[in-house]
Length: 276
Length: 288
Image 1 (cartoon, one colour):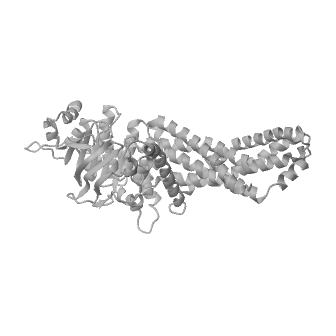
Image 2 (tube, rainbow over the protein chains, first blue to last red; image 1 turned 135 degrees about the vertical axis):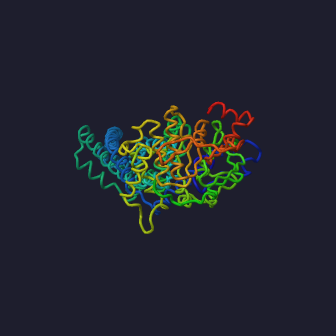
Image 3 (cartoon, chains in turn yellow, cyan; image 1 turned 90 degrees about the vertical axis):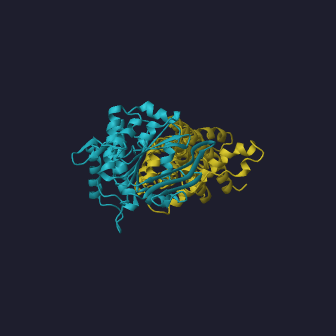
C-alpha cells in the first residue's frame, strides 16, 4: 500500500518482516502486484460502500451515464451490426456443408447473447471509457485537484469513483442488449440477402433457442464487466504520478488491464452457466 | 471578509508537529520534524526542491499520513483520524496548492463556492447547505478581494497563471479560515505578478489576522511578509517601523528545510546572520 492508498485514509504503509525474509526474492518480486491488488480491493470496497452512504451525487451519475452510454452508442451499434453480419456469413459456409443453413439464426443469436455481445461491447467501452476515466482522473491527480477536493470537504471516491461505477453498471447491460439486437439484424440482412433464407426462418429459431440461462449470463457479464472497467479506470487514474507522461501511462494500463480481465472473467462466468 | 469559523486566541497553538517522519521508499520526505505554530503567526518555509516543504503542508491537513509522530491541528490530534473525521477540522484551514488545484470543469464562481457548498462545518444548524444568496455574496466578495470579480463565469483555462493563483487564494480564504497554507504561491510567475500575489497574501493576513504558512523558493516573499503590512485605514501596503533592537513588528518566523529536516528556525535577522552554507543559499540567491 505504498502507492495510491497511502494518500487515502484508513490504510498505512506496511513494513512487515515477511518481505525482508531472505533478502530480495520472490516476495519482493510479488510485492508491487500484491500491493496494487490490495489497493484495488480497498478502492472497490469503498466505492461500493458509498452507494449506500450520503452524500449521493445524482447529477454526476446522470452526466456519466450520458458520457458512457449515449457517447458509446454509435460505435457499439456499428460493431454489433458488423459482428452479427460477419458471423452469419462465416457460419453459413460451414452450415452449407451439412445442409443446415436454416440454423444460422440460432447460432448468431446464441453466440451474440451469450458471449460476443457482452465481450465485444465491454472491450469497446473499456477502450473508450476506461481510458477516458483514467486520463480524466489522472489529470486531476497530477494537477492536485483530487487533493484540493479532499481539502475542501469532499471524499473523491464518493464524488468521482462511485458515480462512474454506478453509471457504468446501469448503461453497460443496456448497451449490450442494444448490441445484441443490432447484431441479430446484421446477421438477418446477410442471411436474407446473400443466403436467401426467409426472414421467419431466421427470426423464429433465433428467438426460440434463447433460454433464461442465456439471458442471465448475457446480462450478468456486462454487469460484472462494468465494475471492472469503471474501477480499473478510476484506480489507475487516481494512482497517477509523473505528470502528463504518467497520465498517458495510466490510460494505457487501464485499457490493457480492463480488457484482459474482461476475457478472464467471461471464462469464469461462462463456466458457471455451461454444464459440460 | 466574513467572520472566521472560529476566532482563535492569539496565544493558542494552531499547529504542532511532534517528531514527525514520512518516507517514500528509502527517501525521507520528513525526518523527525517538530515545530509549533501560534495563532496569527506567519511562517515562511524555505528549502530546496524535494526538501519536504509540500509534504509538510499536506501532512498538516491530513492529506498524507506520516509514518510516525503526532500532528495536532487546533488542539486535535489528526494523525489517527479517518478521512470522514478530518473534513470538519480541515474546514478551519485554507490551502493554496502549488498547481492551483482549481477544478478545470467548474467556472471560477463554482470553484470559489466549492468549500462553501461542500464543507459541512459551515452549514447552519438544521440547514442542509448555505443559502444560495449568501454563497453568491461571499464568492463575489472573495473574488473582489483578489480583484477578479469580472471572471465569475470564466473557466480556469481562460485565465493566466497569476490569475489562477489569485482565484486559488480566493478559494482558500472564502471561508475565512484561521490558518491558511500557501504552497509556492509565486512559483513560475514573473516578479511583478509574484509581488502582487504576496501583497494579496499579506493583505489577507493583516485584515483577518489569520495564521499562515508560506512555502516558497523566493527569499523576497519572506522579506515582504516580514517587513510590510496592510494598512486598512489608507488601503495600502506600507513598510513596518522597526523597534530599537531591530526586530520586525510583524509576527513572522523563517524555517529552512533540508532533506525533510528543519535546519533553521528563527527571525529574518537570525536568518541573515546564519553562517550555515545551506541556509545562506536562500538568503543570497533571493537578496532583499
